[in-house]
Amino acid sequence: MSTTTLRYRGPEEIEFDEYRRNPEQWRPVIDTHWDRNKEWILDQATMFGCVWIVVCGKSVAAHGTDIADFPDEENLLRIGNAWGLIPFAYDVRE
Image (cartoon, rainbow, N blue to C red; front, side, top):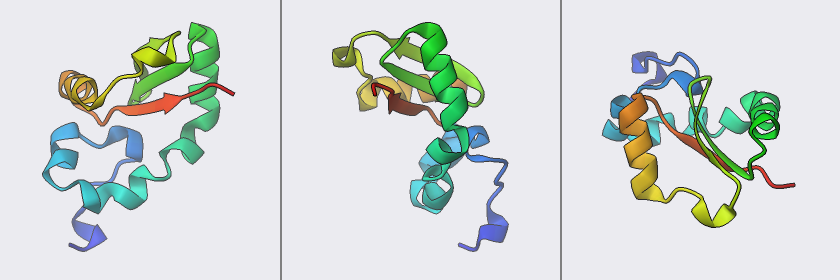
């Protein structure tokens, strides 16, 4: 599929259902999410005092202070469905 058929609006704005239909077509875009949003994500993590964070768009969808509670695939699917956007989960421990 050519990239001209993708409705790319930035990796944080890819609709979750669109992503789930063909995740590999979005791989190059998704792989840049951290680099494009690292500063904002780390600022949010500091503000929440967390060690892991899940962002959907420009919102914090979930966060936690115990790495053992890092969301598994099932929880990420639930978050993505609830928010309608790809959930990006990060371990933000330094």
